[in-house]
Length: 421
Image 1 (cartoon, one colour):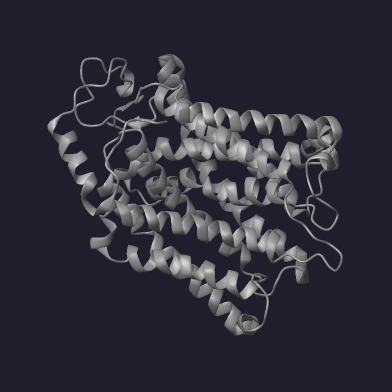
Image 2 (cartoon, rainbow, N blue to C red):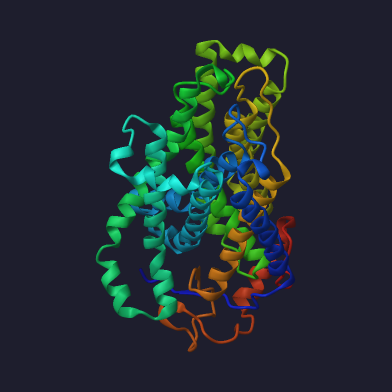
């Protein structure tokens, strides 16, 4: 590839960074309390609700949001759309920490965490278990993601020999990086099939593995768009609107397939009649559909897709709709029977918030210190290191950069402000 990547530089220890660090410290205090006094000291989990917000967000939802690397790998390596290769590293970065922290949160969630290694011992494996397949796939995929992302770290270390040797085998990691998420994202849906009547009929369906896979891919593209816009506004990067517009063009078609399958199956099975019954479930179902329809309506229009504000709000709508779908299916629309109630404890919520804060801190560290981002026009000067790893001060704003900055103001998207992250 001819792309040149570089660290964006800038001050790392900002007020924003310190605030995120404070959230991480609060989470660390609750995690320490959990390991000292037991899981009941910080959570409201029970036999009726063994999967609370930790599994629902950190694993089920968090890994779907972290599917940016998987979604971009499908586009670049399977559908041979090489023009999107400059966005691969940033997408991989979100995936690396999304999956790594999801795996770490499982250690906090498991009651007898000191026996977690038994999952990987053949003599204790239940080969008929969907949970085993999810555990093994997520673990292996996390390792694969670090291998795929390692060229970025090796370039920052200028370890050229290691980098040359790694590239001979990187295609194997890429292949596994496409296979493994396809398996475990669909298997997360299979876990709900096992739950049977405990899951509300508006979510319970035999095609739920396919629905989970479709929404994971769609959320993967949405997080790529969202992350790119975040970097452009908060880290003073040029907008990547032409590429984002093309990526966003895929999202409405995936959502249309998802809605046709989900609503069509509900009509055929007769479960659609539950929309006309009482309770919060019909409202939640319609809210999910409304968020996806909003994204479809705007992203189908080519003129709308070139507006950063539209890209921002539609990508956010897709992420919220996909997250709501998973929260509804695993926690809100899940009824274990009479007598069981659940609402996350303060400790559960703070640990989850701390995990998200740590992920953002890690993102800021890597994009500022390692060559994750594509070098912008005018940044490949004499100070550029290997693969565009730029080691000097940020160059003066060039004419293309000023034009890009002016275009940011059009469409209502906020112009670049002083870096706060």
